[in-house]
Amino acid sequence: MRTFRAEAFGGIVQLERPRALVFIDRDYARSLGHDGGARWSAPETALGARPLAAPLEAHLQLTNRCGAGCRGCYTGATPTGAAGEWGLAEWKRAIDALAKQGVFHLALGGGESAALPWLGDIAAHARARGLIPNLTTSGLEGLDRLVAIAPLFGQINVSIDGVGDVYARVRGFDGFARADAAVLRLRAVKKEIGLNCVVTRDSFDALGDVFAYARRRRLNEVELLRFKPAGRGERAYAALRCTDEQHRAFLPTVLRLSRRHRVRVRVDCSYTPMIAWHDPGAELLRQLAVYGCVGGDFLIGAKASGVMTACSFAAPPPERPRVDAIAAYWERDDAFAAFRGWRDAEEPCRSCPYHELCRGGCRVVSAHVAGSLRAPDPECPRVTSHRRHLPVLG
Amino acid sequence: MKDKKGRILAVKWGLNPNSSSLGVDVTFLLLGAGALALLTPVVGALLRLRRVRGKKAAP
Picture 1 (cartoon, each protein chain N blue to C red):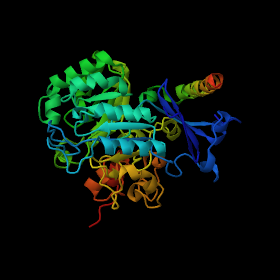
Picture 2 (cartoon, each protein chain N blue to C red; picture 1 turned 45 degrees about the vertical axis):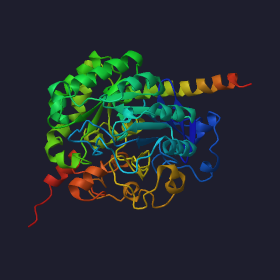
Picture 3 (cartoon, chains in turn cyan, purple; picture 1 turned 90 degrees about the vertical axis):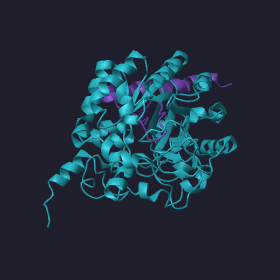
Picture 4 (cartoon, one colour; picture 1 turned 180 degrees about the horizontal axis):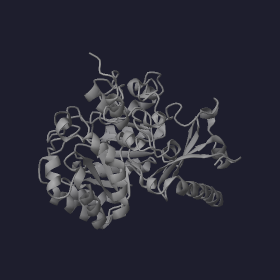
């Protein structure tokens, strides 16, 4: 396991127990015996002042094959998959490149990666190169094989977008019983099993059932994901996205449920505007590494064809760089320009005290709703309030 | 938190299995800044303990 990576601000130390990435300044790194080498040759910068030396994690879509057919699938997965999908050899090469770059973690997804007969080879290869592989699965395919290789992964989450009937309302088919069976089998062999839940306007009021379910099944976390307008989700977006009132109620609701059911809660980066709106304190969020859009910086995605993206929802950059060539692309001045250019923001982001963290919210939602990757997240409560108070011109 | 030994700037807890976004543990928001201020020295102690163990393990 990689234990340290030098950065312009200092470095990042990885702890195994408790599982954490600790961001430290140069003095602290020196006191631990680390040397930043060439990355410390220029003056020390603040965390966030420039992109990291490498992503913290890479999100690899190992395949876009999946037979579930969820109506909101953000990759538009199908039973036949995508054209030009990579195989084991190409993904191993990519993992070698990511390891050399200094990436800490992989998040493996799809499609349904658990259906791949070589998923265990990928996980073992990642471990051998010092990366921790993590996995999201629907639990609907490849379960026998996955149970056997589960110990190779750091964390496995099963996608459960609602309990009982709510699952079918969100996904468009009734797969809850099978997903629940997968949770039971995985939890029998591994402690670090959680669930991923895409939150929709239909399922928001039933989130309590999701936390109660996680507690009942002794899961270690609930990760809540905002519905994104990508893949088949573009068509379903207007019907499934949460309302402004739900977004405003999101943070107190999930913290109340986390406390009541004693289950840890993680939220995806696109929810940062909904957290910041409650003004918990910028320094507190900074200390917890709560950032908004960190695509092309803290994280990258890779399509099933190996093309690299700023995040899994985003279209590839015009150059269509491959993930196994990350070293050549990462340092370019124009790399992931639409994502790294977050400082050039419009109001109300420009004057927001959380902008350095939030970075304008979810770029993919902005592109879909506002027509520009650089527009403020149109579902941020601060943005919606700002727009309501704008004078009506006509 | 600033002293001659430098600063812990941030701690990102847990592992993110979600291949579509960066998940962050917000459970600590239940505890607030005060609890986090108590936790930071604990993380620092773990970092230094690991260094001591690493030195002892070295030939």
